[in-house]
Image (cartoon, rainbow, N blue to C red; front, side, top):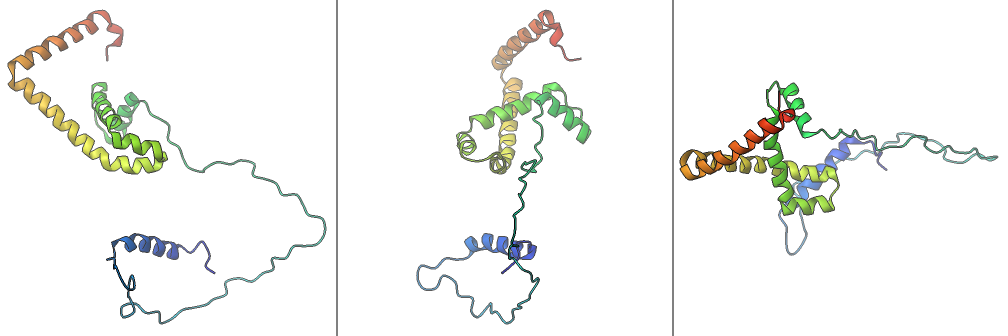
Length: 186
């Protein structure tokens, strides 16, 4: 019998679990033959504790159930995206503005449109989804950067594109400045 608290054994089990799929597979015969490479030469049997597990005779005392239960996991509060910019600025000494929030909005929308992420979210808990998502997030950032570079290049190099974008953005900015001054960022 092995105590559950044996951390070395847990690490060995985890290592072997990840090693096993990487080992070559054989179609016939023994799956693996380590006889010449690995051989058990010693083992140790040790008594760690001794005690009685018998119940006492007499009246049984009532057992109290748990009073407070919970997962013990810390759950971070959802941070509004505008607050995310504040947190990034505080933690990393940057000076991002609310306008930079749009880049994060673009990343979120691109992720939501990804069918494989939608499927993963449907069948996985949030922690497992986060592992998959963290691997894909860098790709989303690169794709968004390339698309923004494409917009920049077209704006700078194509006169018709530049005129259309200028006219549209000029109208939007004018209407916000003229009719919604309360929404202005100070």
